Every structure is written in structure tokens, then in C-alpha cells.
Length: 209
Image: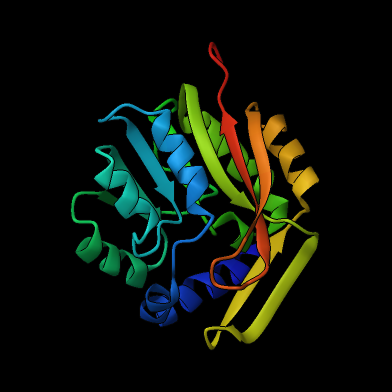
């Protein structure tokens, strides 16, 4: 079942990649990213998971002088990213199994991606984030704000089938902590595309772990 849902998300973003890019605007969600950038030094290695076309998140990280690896599993999104963020390294893979060595990155960023993963796999996603982070590394993560076991809608998201699944904000904070990360901040942020709102968490891998 999880594979079917993952396939729905992949096909959906392949079909509407250009429409999503045209509709995507930067809003209050970018404040968490700006907070992260103040904690990094130029050249820091950053992984952007679920990077899409690379606008605006990957693009902003590159502009800040970081070494960026952008990961997505949509072919169409990655083709757009090659055009918009040519200085980023692009990787096609899934959040559930990151193809990187342990302690590879100074930061891991994820905007509007975990919410499309079956929530039974969210603990595994957070474990992967913790694994690839270096000690003292930071992770701004966009997570669910309300309890949605599974929402598979045939046409509500820019005209294509799409799937969402997530826990409420409090449960998410607990799962991030269970993965071995320290939650520094958690707040509700309205979706810039008027699609409800999300819990934005800023987490940190403790030193020595």
C-alpha cells in the first residue's frame, strides 16, 4: 500500500511540476530556512530533501554560499531543478532511504515532502535525517499540523491525484525527539499556497551522537 501511495505522489509531481513551480511562492515558511542559514558558515554541506524544482528553497541555500545536494524522486522536478539551480548536486532518491553515508551533512532541510509520505514511515524518515546529520547539525522540517491518517484525493491538488499522511504537531515533535534529535523550535506556519498550515520544526543532532 505504501508503494502505491508513493507512486501516486511521484506521478502527480511529474505531471504538474511546471504548474507547481508557477504557483509556488515564498511566504512565512522561509523564516525557518533563514534561521538555519544564520547557524551555518559558507561552504557548509546541506541536503535539501524533496527539493522539487529547487525554487525557492534550494535556490536560497545556494545563494547563501552553501554546498547543496538536492534530492527528489520526481524526474520532472529534477529536470526543472537542473535549470534553476545548476550549482546544486542533484540526486534522485526517496526520503525513506537516503543514499548517503552517516554524518554526511551539516544540515538537512525538508519542505512539503514528509507530509506526502505514509505516516507509518515517518519515524524511519526522521531516523534517516538524524543518521546523515553531523553532530551539532540542524534540520528544519515541514511536518503535519493535524491528524491525517491518509488522504488520497483524485484531483484536488493542481488537477492531479495526490496523497497526504501525517500526525498532529505534538506527535511529530515527539517522533523527531525519538529519532535522537533535539527540537529547538516548533511552530504553526500557514501554507503560502493557501493549503492549510503545517508544523515547522527546527531540530539539532546533539554533539557526541
